Image (cartoon, rainbow, N blue to C red):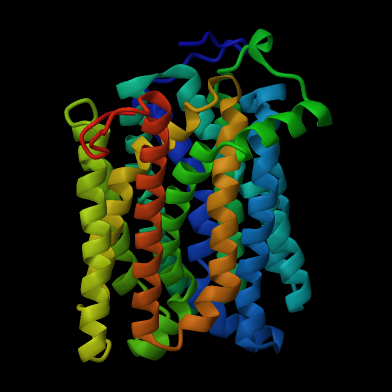
Length: 417
């Protein structure tokens, strides 16, 4: 474990998990809390639902672009400094969202939120890898995921009640208070885990070389792509939630819990299971179980809506099993991606998050608006994403073993990377 150059006592693994989860929660709070307010924003700003939908796209796009820099900046200037700076920028952007009186201003401040929100996720992963390795790292990452899973569950419920009792601007004001408190707590308690002597230079040539090294790696593209497409199957329903909940299921803005609690329950249980299985089962066996759940849940979702109209609870139940599988495979896949380039883990974390978030931006801006008018089409889209994720994972395993032992036939489900 690294020493702390700022003389802040290093927290226990549980306290570190809570802190990193709090940082990671900025993402789902930024996305999920205001989803129930889409109709209210549409009416307040005198715009269309598609224009309000694009505030999510603007956030995701800028999040994806800037996430390429968070890891590199933390590799050069330290983890703590980047976290504190990003929280300050996010707080300012959130106040701007609350004060917006046109959808164009809301787009601009949502983009500024996106530019700063990703630091907690990316730098948090790098902090875990700075301080722990192998099984302890996998367990800590799954613990962060378990705590983090609270955010997508409570965010839309909280947002729905706020918009019902007050207005949509109060959602962003509440998020500002959360960010300010988090900034103060991290200033007091977050240690620096990357000593000066281990930092890498921040210059365009080095960054270009690092990004080129990562993005040209077939293993990175395959394994990071698997994570991204697994997540896309869930995010399709997140982006379509305002229509899925209110139009297809006929629920109100304060009833988003019907969709998000099953989804988040699966994330939490999957992370808990991954935590318990770390070191007990091979990566291949964990992946097998996870993808059985991913593909199985998606297929059941398609078959149900092929013959029956959308209804509670049947239309949301597959989301529990889908996210259970997704969360089960995510910690091992994430660590495998990080370990492809041990000397630039911050940069790798940025590239992996960029891949996932850019696909999320495409889902929010293009795929969800195209599919969300039919629940069957949403189910088919989720199945397609899960199948692509499985193919990328198996392709990555096959490529990896072809390099290690080109003359051997290896069972990709049984062996460990």
